[in-house]
Image (tube, rainbow, N blue to C red; front, side, top):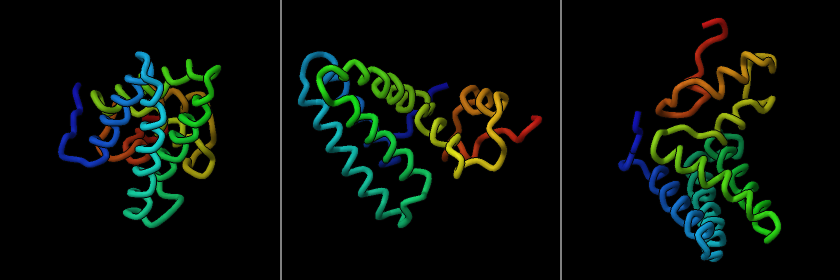
Length: 140
């Protein structure tokens, strides 16, 4: 199911970011730097909108930025494949692997960390909003 949400600013941020990452992977390393810069802009924009550093959208963008920065040194640039593939999945299908990882952090979950929780987290369908709102309840 396609989830192209062109009316949302966040969707446009992710689309431009993934295009820049793709440029970096096809031989234009400036794309990586521009993607990092745009992610910082996105983080500031959503920080001003959410007014809380602990808001889920801020956490997702923070960890995404950290992954981009970790991937920046030349020997680590193969890691850019992870956010590129993941961000294309987000832009096209609404599936955000980073949000799912972040949802498993201790301060974002209400139930103990278990294999069924991880299974549900990564295999549940994408939803509008965020994964915290869309996870099926335990035992569902």
